Length: 158
Image (cartoon, rainbow, N blue to C red):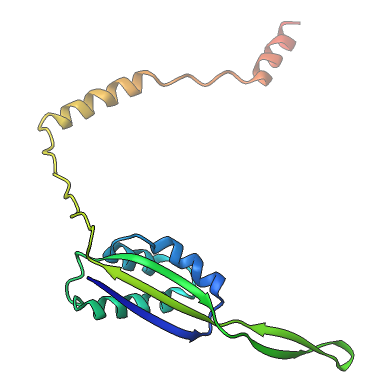
């Protein structure tokens, strides 16, 4: 089953929102939320909000373990034209871009996550560590004699 969430007329540039969407596209929802929490972008709040809405629309807000982000795209919204004061009393135009964000989540084709088995540590590990420490101590190099000491010896010999 698919569920979608749409945010329209959002005051973020579409190019910047798309940078965040490319990171979470085709990811599991849990992983997507984890990625969004660590991304240093301002638009992550918006994407997280819309993703949470899409998950809620699927009816799995409490347990979204079987969901993945199927599609996520952003489109250009209307551009707000504004003026900024310029030199010699002129006005310089600039544009405030808006965007329309759509995220679709699905439960189809989601492979269950494999859990890693923990391996038991060997009891003889401390003995092996002590043996490697002894060999490491033997392999230490002596410091090379300084050239100034050699020159001093040569001068003394003359």
